[in-house]
Image 1 (cartoon, helix red, strand yellow):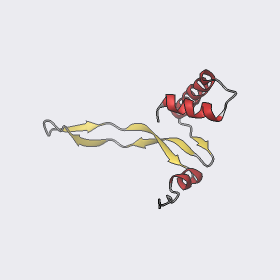
Image 2: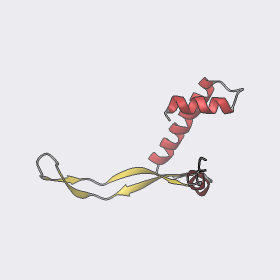
Image 3: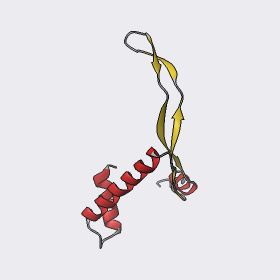
Length: 98
C-alpha cells in the first residue's frame, strides 16, 4: 500500500472528510514523527507500536566489488516496534477455504 492507497482507504472510512484533508493529516503525522525522532524522542501509539531511534555501532565491512575493508561509521537509525494489538491482528489464524 502506498500513500495514495492509504489516503483512499482512510477516506472510505471517513466519508465526511476530503482526500485533501486526509493527505494533509498523513503528511502532518509523518512530519511530526520525523521531528520527534530527530530530537531523540520516542513516539508511542498504544496498541499500534512505537517509533524510536536506535544507535548502530561502527563496524568494518567489505567492498563487494574489490573485497577491500571499509569502515562503516556508527549511525542513528529509526525503528518501529509493533504493539500487542497490531501483532495479534497480523497473526490471526487464517480461515481455511472449503
